[in-house]
Image 1 (cartoon, rainbow, N blue to C red):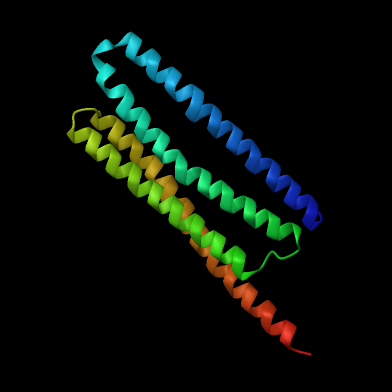
Image 2 (cartoon, rainbow, N blue to C red; image 1 turned 135 degrees about the horizontal axis):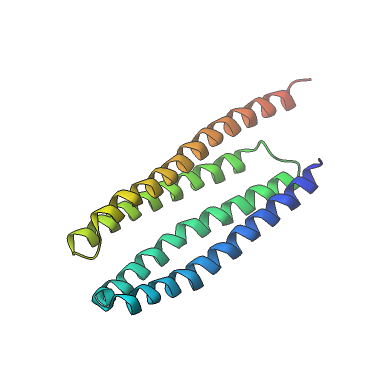
Length: 159
């Protein structure tokens, strides 16, 4: 597989994830929330706070996708192991970690405001764990890409 075809595949996957995320955040979450409120009117006061929390959590996710797209552009240029890609991966790490921390704090706040059930709080810890796992993986890849870029730069200087 060439660098350009790999880049095209990765761009397609990123576009697919962005479209699926848009459908989930823009369509499914409001629809399921509205269905829940229609079935249980006593939860109506929780609808908009939860929707806001979930929509705000989408922002770092799309920033991660944008940085992933920048990495695919570098891969297409046959510049896979570069300081730029290490920087993009470090940003992905920070965005994933920030989203996990935000989601955890938002869940706690909603719990203390009596807009969250303890079981939802516990289940959301799995989402937080997934975000931290993405952050740790991106940090490790950033470190490895940075080291590979340094070695590549040293080899260019060697005759």
